[in-house]
Amino acid sequence: MSYFEDFIDDYIADEDMIYRQIEEKAKKGYWQTKDGTILHVSEMSDDHIRNCINFINKHDKKDYFLPWIDMFEKELRRRNF
Image 1 (cartoon, rainbow, N blue to C red):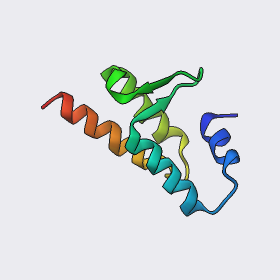
Image 2: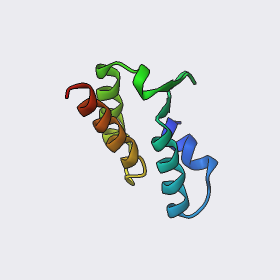
Image 3: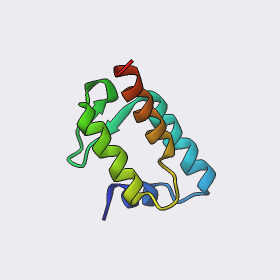
Image 4: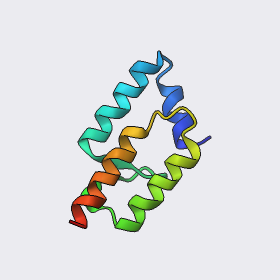
């Protein structure tokens, strides 16, 4: 089972609630890796962030994790400004 499926299974509720909870986690900027490590986006390499964006784009069929893509893209822009 994927990270996304696990996350969604934990929150059997309406889609708006799921999206709001994901949005709140993204605002805080803490990403949980597959092995359970929690990193702040500022601790992640550019390549790691890009890999996360690609992963989300590939696996997030309902666009729940779009707030993460926004947050990751803002971080990359901030670094390259």
